[in-house]
Each structure stands twice: as structure tokens, then as C-alpha cells.
Length: 340
Image 1: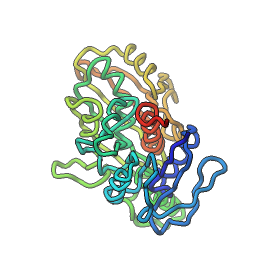
Image 2: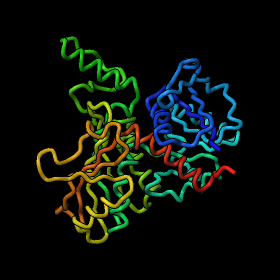
Image 3: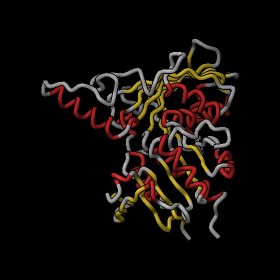
């Protein structure tokens, strides 16, 4: 017997990827419902190779009888409709930032803290972490188990797809306009993104960090270990899909480079691609459409005791969002929502 699944935000980048991922991984569905705003109602979206779903209006949809909701409509919309779906009896896996730091909502990366899923019963909601946090903690987990990470310094290089379809369109249009000598003013971003880097993702906070950087700090603590110190600098780059991160860790115990490499190779969801030669590493262009978190450039950091540096790349729409949500749903039905 299959599960009735609703995908909220089905016309967006992540929503479409959720539908694709559900089909690719053969999630046991009896029905899939695509939901979005009233202006998108009536549009069609694909589910698998042959099924076409007609989008329904989220505002008027009755969630009664829905088993699982995969939600990615934006934080303000989720704040209204995720509790409504949970009250109707569904388990909501919410991809927005709204519920992540609420103490009675589990924040889950299945390769890192699957045991936290059991706490979904308190609110009926499970939070999907920020895309940049997800790929980092997948790589950190085996190293933390090996030598106990004390401190993380990370610089991210995040693709425009993390800011939605309008951001991808802006990169495309700006690039084209520059080539024809007719530059366009930025709308989605605070400065030109084409052929440029922007060291700001989300709003600035009082301490000078951005909200994206704050997310990486507090989410890593909640998912992996409250004692880990994190310093993050998040940068938007002119790449369509795929987030990259330069990560340096300081551990409580000595960390041998060979043992670290072996631990990463054994870790679920991680692929080590690290040859010390030109091209012997992964780039975002190569990870687009892939499920894994890729780790390259593994080397000792000689500036601190027990230090290690490495490069992490992943598709932010898949493992950074849709795939992680579907993996949570897979653990949920395996361990908690078994159909009779």
C-alpha cells in the first residue's frame, strides 16, 4: 500500500526537484498532489516520465487523508500551511527556514542524525536544513566521529539557484546583456551577479554576519554537536546549480590525513574524488544532477593543532533540498509510518 504525498511549492525549483526525486527513487506513493499559490493553480507539472499533475491551490486544499507533505513554498507561506497540514494528520517535511530552530521540531540530515526523526510526533513537522549546512555536515560527520571537531571555518560559493528561478533568470539575462553591450541593472541581487561575486546571502545581522552565515552556525550545532564553533562566510557566485565550500576544521584529537580520507570514503552519501593533479577534484558543473556530497582537496592544515582542510561540492537542489527531504520521508516510512 502506498502513501498519499503532497508537494507544496510544486512549480518552484525545489518543488519540481522533489517530484523528480520521488519518482526516481520509486517512493511508494498511492497518490501525489501538486500544490502552489492560486496564480499557479491549473498549471501542469511532471511526475516521473509519463505522469502529469494539475497544480491545485494550496490556500483551499484540504490535507485530510494526506500522509506526508514535502513543503518548499517560502517561510511565510509555510508558517501558515505546514501547521495546518500537520493538524489534519499529515507529517510535514518542511524545506523552509521557518521551523528549523524551534526546539520541538527536529532538524534532520539522514546521514548525520536520523534518530532525531522520532521527535516528529511533537509537532508533526520535520525541518529540512539549509542547503549549505546539509552538504557540510554530511562531510563533517565522519570526521567528527573520528577526532571530535572543535571548530569549523567555512567559506561558501553558492549558486544562484539557491535564490530561486528569478535569480537564475537574472544571471542568464545579465550575462547575455553584457555580451551585447547593454548591461541590465540587478533586481534579485544587490549587485551584478554575472562575472562577479557577491559576499552577501540574505540580510545582515547586528554582528555583521548575514542570516545565511548565522544559519550555518546554529544549524550545525543543532544537527551535529552544540559544542562545535563555526565561522562562516557565504558568497553568491555566477553558477546556476551546485554549491561549493572551502572547509577547515580543528579537532580535539590528532587527525591523520589518511584515516580522514578513509573515513570519508566509508561515509554514506559521500564520494571522495581527490587526485593531486590538474582536474583531480570536483566542481559544481560536474555535480549538477547528482545525489552525492563530493569531497576533494583533503590536506592537513599546519596552522592549527589537529587541523584539516578540504573542498565540498553538492547539487543544492538535490541533496541540498529535495533529496534530503525525500530521504527523511524514506526513514519516516521505514521506521515510524509503516502502512498496515
